[in-house]
Image (cartoon, rainbow over all chains, first blue to last red; front, top):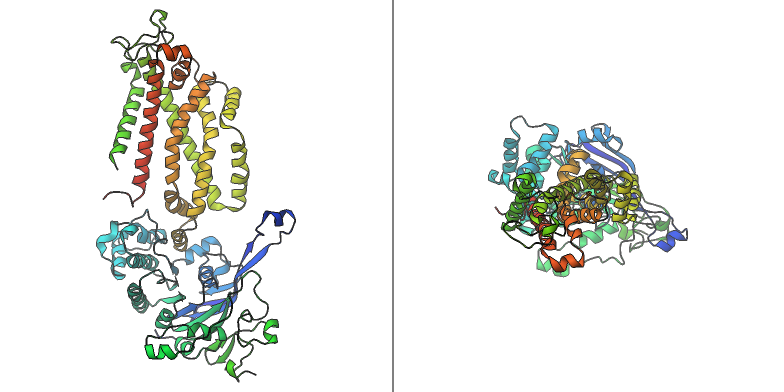
Length: 342
Length: 271
C-alpha cells in the first residue's frame, strides 16, 4: 500500500443539499411553507491518492454515505467538483457518466438488499460485463474467474442470492464491483452488517484485491477499529464537513480536533488493564439537525473547549502538522494542542 | 409449482378448449327456443336442462365460454399491460411526470364510478363485444397502474437498483430487469381477481342491454336471465350451471395467479 502521492480523485467544495417541505398541512395552508434545506454534505474538499485506502468515519447521519454516493453520482451533488482523470464527474452528462462508471465502483452496506433477488449469481456478476462488453472470452468464464478471485466456488453460478450467507453475499457484491476492472471503489460500510469473524475475512479479501489490482478505496465506516486496520489516511466527518484528516497512525495516536478526540477515545482497547484506566471523553448533547446546522463551527454546541469566536466564524481545514489537517479555530501550527489553548 | 397450480392450468385449458371447439361440443343450437320444453330438468336430451325459453343450458354454456373467457382474458391482459407501463413510468421517473400521471390522470379515472363510466362509454360507442371490452379496459387499467406505481416507488430505492446504476445500466434496463420483476407480484394476484371482476362486469353490462345483444349467450347474460324469482323457484339449474362455470373460471385463474407468483419468486421455488 505504498503511496506515491498522485491524486486519483480530487473533491472540491462538494455539496449535497436536499429540499424538504414543511410537514404539517396547517403550515402549508397558513403560508408558513418555507422550504428547509438539509445540508447532508456541505462543502467537502478531499484528495484521494492513487492506491491508498482513505477511511471516512463519523457518526450516523453525518453525511458519510451521501458523500460516497455523490462522488459516484448515485446522489446528484448540488454544487462542487469531483475531478477524476481531468474530468469533472459532477458536471458530466448522464451518458458521459455512464462511460466513466467502469472505473468507479461501489460496495454496499447491506448484502441482503444490494443483490437483485430474482437474478442468479451469474447474472448479477455478468451484468456489468455485458453492459460494457468487457469480456474477451465468454461471459460465463469471466464470471467464474471473478467468483474464484473473491473466494466463491464456481459451482454456485446458477444459485440465487438467498441461498448464500451474509459474508458470501458480500463477496458476490465485491465480485460484481470488480467485474468492470475499476480503479476506485467506494466501500460504504461494507462490513457493518456482518459477523465479527466474517468482517475480518472481508477486510482481508479487500486488502488482497487492493494489492493485486492496485485499487483505491474510500472506506466508509463507523467502526473505528476496522478503519484503523485498513486505512492509510483517515478523514473524520461531522455534520456534513470534514473536521480532521491525517495519516491513520497519526490520527489514532494523536487526534487534534476535539470531536476526533472524543470519537477515538470511545474505541475499546482489548486489554483489561488499560481498558479499566482508559479515559473516555463523553460529549454532551446530540448531533444537531442538519436542517439549520449551527452557525460558525458546527461542533461548538458540544465542544468542551468552546469560546465565543467559535460561534461566529467557520474554521477552515488547516495543515496543523505535516500531512495533518484540522478544522478548528482554537489551534494552529504554532499551538497544535487544544488543551493548551488560551 | 404446487398441485393447485396444475389444477388451475388444467381447468383453464379445458375451458379454453371448450370455447374453441364449441360448435363440436354443443348438443343443440344455443339460440333456438322451444317453448314446449321450458324449465325442463336435466335429462339425456338436455344435459343441464333448459331455460325459461326452452333453450338448452349446456349448449348456451359452451358457447358462452367463448364470450366470457374472451372478455375476462382480453380485458385483464390489456388493462394489466397498460396499467403496468403507465404506473411504472409514474413511479420510476417521479417529479412532474408523476404529478401529471398519478396526481391528475389517475384521479380523473378514479373519480368516476367504474360501471357508470363503462355504461357512458358503451352508450357513446355503441353496443358490441369489442366496444364492451374497450370500455372495461378503460375503467380497468387505473387500478393496476396505482398498485404498480406504489411498488415501483418502493423497489427503486433498494440498494440493488443503485448498484445497477453504479454499473452503468440504462434507465430502461433498470426499470425492466431490476425493478419490474421485483414489483410485479401484487399485480399478479390483483389480475387473477380482476379476471373474475371483468367476467362479472360483462354480465352486468349485458343485463343492462349494453353488452352482448341477446340472444347470443354469455355466462353473464345467462345469470341475469335466471334472476327472476319464478325461474329460481321453478328451475334452479338455470342459475346453477352458469354460476358454477364463473366460479370455476375465477378459481382456476386464482390458482394460476398463485402459482405464477410463486414461480416468479426464487425463494419459494422448489429446487
